[in-house]
Amino acid sequence: MRLILLGSPGAGKGTQAQYIVKRYGIVQIATGDMLRHTLEAKNDLSVAVKRAMDAGELVSDELMIAIVKARLLQSDCKAGFLLDGFPRTLAQAEALHQNDVQLDYVIEVKVDEQTILERLTGRRVHPGSGRSYHLIYHPPKNPGVDDVTGEPLIQRKDDEEQTVRRRLAVYREQTMPLVGYYQQWALRSPEDAPRYYQINGDRPVEVVRDEIISILDSKKASADHLG
Ligand code: AMP
Image 1: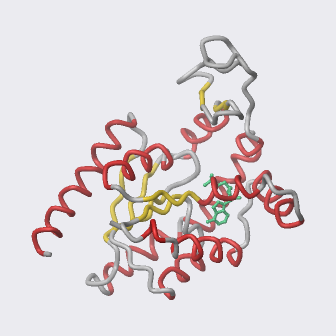
Image 2: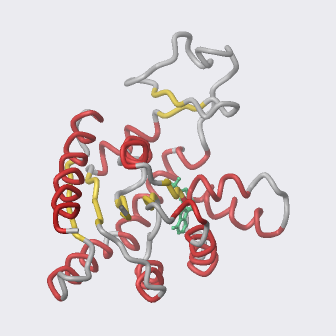
């Protein structure tokens, strides 16, 4: 199974991705996480990437396409993969197509902007473990510190309100056109286009998860049957 999870920052793609990859035995390719790992090396490239991420801007298509192309060549992708955070621009989507990357599904997780703003600006993380909290929806036992280690929690720079607003605008301007791109492709040539589904992500994570799984299970069953 090969799929793209599409959705604005904070729509819950990462959480849903974890359920999906576990259930179907595929790998998650989360470009934001991949970039965050590259920041550990201190060089000109990582400084430029950090600057773009902290400002809520996109990293260049050229770099992102190179990173994802290299990742897709690794053997663990053979059994299938889930792209989380890629493609984010039409150029990135076109690059997948031009490189003959076959896709079965594009699943869009849709959440309105005000909800996203509350979700992201309230998020706090424990840098050591990546454990994530929310000031209102999932507060730590003691304010400002991690439940397990007692170490201080931080707000990611790209979760600050001004940056979140910028990330949402970037999503609207650069990534939303992908919805039309995949929908039109499906109309034009349904035999090779990925199937497109839109899911309401403004519901409890388990409800969203079950809806995605029911789509993937039923399509997988019919594909197995035909295959
Ligand atoms: P994410 O964790 O997916 O929200 O990504 C965090 C940041 O990484 C984004 O705000 C961008 O600066 C950068 N990034 C991640 N994926 C891409 C991509 N496909 N194209 C451009 N920039 C990206």
